[in-house]
Image (tube, rainbow, N blue to C red; front, side, top):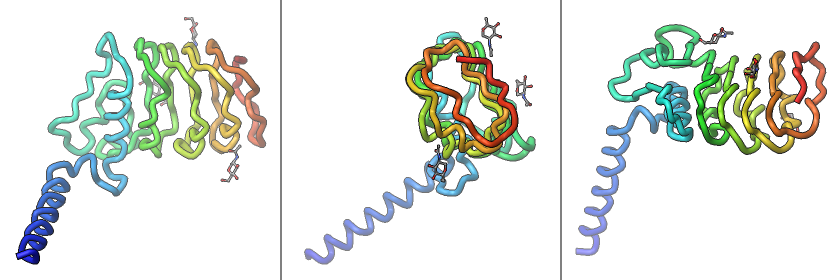
Length: 182
Ligand SMILES: *[C@@H]1O[C@H](CO)[C@@H](O)[C@H](O)[C@H]1NC(C)=O
Ligand SMILES: *[C@@H]1O[C@H](CO)[C@@H](O)[C@H](O)[C@H]1NC(C)=O
Ligand SMILES: *[C@@H]1O[C@H](CO)[C@@H](O)[C@H](O)[C@H]1NC(C)=O
């Protein structure tokens, strides 16, 4: 009896897990195929958007359909990979969106002119290793400028002005920063 019960529980468990993995393939995928979608979803979830600029909806997504979302530009139209995310002057409020870590292919990020606050995460160089351009100007970021930015080896445009940041732009070996002061 105990054996049958255990077998039943096991079967139930597997069925449950199986169902879960079938119902939510879009966001539970461990491959990075959908990770950029997850990136956008968590950005939208984590920020207050009082003027509803982020008209992003995640139902009935087809390949590349999110590439037409406001502020989003993909590497290729039919590919779920974001090249350029431009969300400036949208009155967005919140912390630096943690979900950006799922946008690994991102090269251009513009969050300037919003009401973002808190620190710029130290993990930014690990999470967004391919950044060429980072614009966080005109927000309310505070704390130290992360020294780890020096590890974003492709970064050649950094704008942090009009925040409450302290510290220095980390020195590194790449050519001239387009540094606009802090
Ligand atoms: C990124 O997207 C914004 C908004 O569409 C655009 O103005 C900007 O030129 C783009 N940047 C690059 C490098 O393509
Ligand atoms: C910051 O805001 C000022 C005033 O609105 C504007 O002139 C400037 O271009 C903005 N800076 C950036 C980097 O967006
Ligand atoms: C840069 O990356 C290297 C290797 O991952 C690491 O050892 C170093 O601490 C990093 N430097 C900064 C400033 O994050």
